[in-house]
Image 1 (cartoon, rainbow, N blue to C red):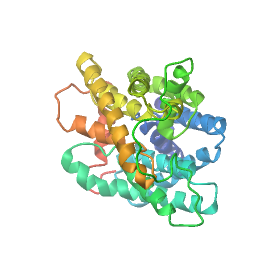
Image 2 (image 1 turned 60 degrees about the vertical axis):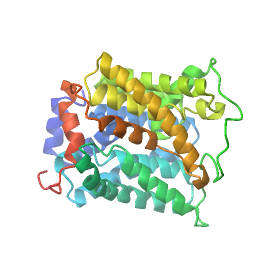
Image 3 (image 1 turned 45 degrees about the horizontal axis):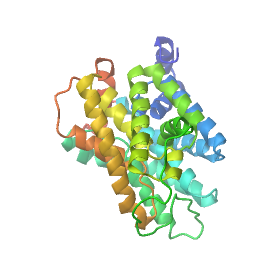
Image 4 (image 1 turned 180 degrees about the vertical axis):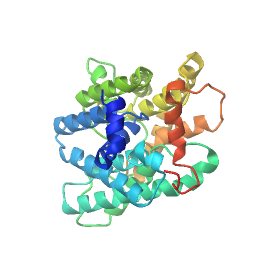
Length: 344
């Protein structure tokens, strides 16, 4: 078993294996997991989905950004425990996915990728001064902020080609072709899981769910539930068929459901209800964010998940923490310590 004692002992003895372990955990941390086997399965899922959707460069961008982001954290002497837990790898990974998805396959794209991966780690460290005072994790906001700046900046450069979902335009009320329940809805739900990594592939979604099961059945259950709830809510509200079919209304709900239902609190009836309310709010926040960002021509990315989860963490509800994730939850906050990483 990859996450067993033999692997850990190997990682403790060899710096190269330790770095690989940190990168694999970084891939898993996108889904708030701390397990290298989960990370490996997620990377396999991204690769399968990138090839399946005709964008193989995405997996290259993901791997390069994951490595660069983790290396940058080491060079900047970030908290050692957080680096080893992959907490400086997951946001750069997503930035790599965003750059290679929304920018064309041109030389400037790869320059932006390097800049973005390094900058995302710096932004992660910078944001700690804010979220530390709130007592909450930064989640994927460093990825969101960095990728927004990269995409907005690309509009000014002739050597960049943007392939964002929609060009800058004033928002229009209502969807021209509302989605409906049908035989493809199940595949749309799975695509919602894969869209966490900006990949439209039900195959990738299935592999990613398998990766979650390896580490936490509760996380897998809440991920699936979040994808179902987000998709059904979007259909019920009359969201566009194309967006629903690509899983674009499921992925933020997936992350919110995992965070509130399985990682930060012990799964129970009250926390499930709390997580469900969080998912509903996430869908509404996503709709509002889409409207606000339409004139700028940039996607919402995982901002709805971040905003909704922050709002549901700040009330400091007294739900019991998840025992088997206590170390992981500590890790989420380890990067927020004001010691500058001198303890690692």
